[in-house]
Structures are given as C-alpha cells and as structure tokens.
Image 1 (cartoon, rainbow, N blue to C red):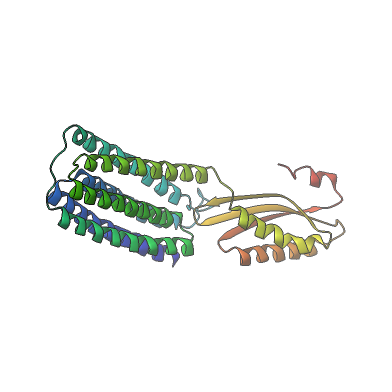
Image 2 (tube, helix red, strand yellow):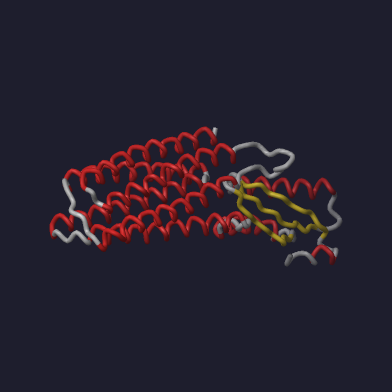
Length: 297
C-alpha cells in the first residue's frame, strides 16, 4: 500500500514537471529571456528526477531476498543522489547559455505574458511541493522529500527570475537577464551538492535522528530501575527502514523464558514508539565481565 501511494505522488510530480516545462518554455520563446530559459532547464531536471523517483520507490519496495536480506530501501538514496547530479548538470547548461548574453545582451519581448506564464508555473510547483513534502513525511520516503525540496528550490528560483525580469521591463537594463540566470545557476549548484552530500551520508549508514535515539533511551529508563542494564546501542537508516541494535544485561539467575519475555516487551515498546524500525537485541548476564567488554564497540 505504501509503495502504491508513494508511486502516485511520484507520478504527480511528473505531471507537474511536464506542465511547468511547457509554461516556462513558452515564457522563454515569447520573451527570448535567458532567465526564463534557465528556469525551464531546472524544471527539465525535475522531470528526469521524477522518473528516477518512480524507479527508486518501486525498487525500494521489493521484499528482501537471498542477496539483499535487509531489503532494497537504499535504492531511494541513489535517486536522491542522481537528482543532485542532474541539478549540477543543469547549472552548467545555464552558465553556458548566460555568459554570452553578458557579453552581448539581447532585447526581450512580450515580458508581461512571459511573466504570467512563469507565475502560473510557480504556483503549480509550490502546490505540488507542499503535497509531496507532507506525503514524504507521512510515508517516510526520502525520495519524495528530496523531490519536494527540489520543487521548492525551483519555486524560489522562479520568484527570483520573475522579479529580475520585472526589473528588466521597468529599467531596460538587459544585462540583468543573464545575471539573474547566473544567480539561478549558483543557487541550484548549492541544492545539488546538498542532495549529493545527504545521499552519500545515508549510504554510509548514518544514524537515526538524535530525537529518535532519545525516545529509545527513555524507554530503557523504567527497566534500569529494575537493575536491567543496556549498552552497545547502534542505529542506522536505509531509506524508509530504520534499524537499532543493543545489548540487554540481566541477572544470570534469570531463566531463558524471563530474558526472552523482557526482550520481546522492550522491542514491542520501541516499535510502537517508532514505526518502520527493526529492533535487534542481544541478551547477556550482568555478572559476566565479558558482557561489558563490547559496550564501546
């Protein structure tokens, strides 16, 4: 169900990208503005990234198999990193287009109609970004969240282009048009590098957020009052899935059943507090010195 729902939002992003590309290309063809062209190129990146998101969400939802016992969730990070690389590629294209216009500014035409088309495109992007951001948080999808943040970046880019083109129409300073395009390129380079960095960090098994780690340690507190101890907690994320492992130290006189029941109780409490998490526990006797040797591993 989650896979089906996430794909729906990815297809929504594709539809929005197609609509905004058409509107922004129309604005460019009407006005001959390289600023509008740079905005359209970024929406082109949105379209390719949206197709990548559909692939990532579909592949990440595949169940575990013999070669991938922990599932395929990390596929979403490849999509996010790919989107970052595409953004950098678009920035290079914008710069190549804008630099000649700095040397030889070109006249602009039908600016009013071009501005209207760009404003409509920005409204579409803003609305879809809001929907994707909410869906990404609800479905725990880094792909949808990355797509949403990219669309929001596109919105701010469009706002900058619109304001700049408006100033061109008021002042007649044609050089503002390529300058705006270069500023757009710098802005989206920052976005692309940030997406690549976040994806790389996640692929290296980044820990779950500190606030979620705190939730887990707070669950331990009542048991510690009963002379149960915990250590060697390790966490990591893989797309929509999260993993935590830790050791539970109990009196050696406990029966296997007592220890098993305690582990089940603690695991269930963590899963209720943090959905989409996988919990692994290791039971050890408090009195055994060897049980404490691995607490700092």
